[in-house]
Image 1: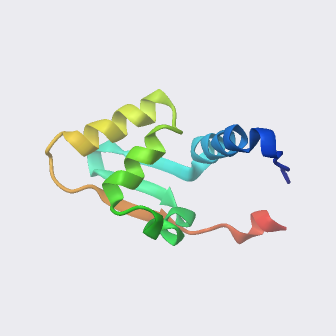
Image 2: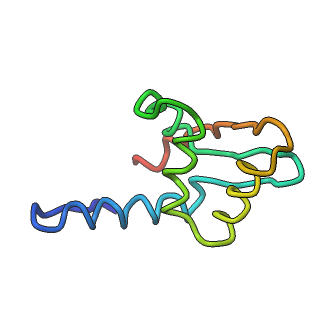
Length: 95
């Protein structure tokens, strides 16, 4: 779906697009493996964030409460490092 943004509502529209992106496969949290699966798009724009933890905290504002709770637990439980796995990008969605 092609979406057009209007100047008066662009901020809200971009937030809605980010929420839809992350709620539809942009992130998966596997608690027992301490692993977060992210869309490869996040790797491409990783330099926009100074560190992984800041990126994950930014993502938390766009995901449902369940995933946000899992992510909060992983980031704050002191149980060791968190693995980030970037999923392959599905180029066919651009057709």
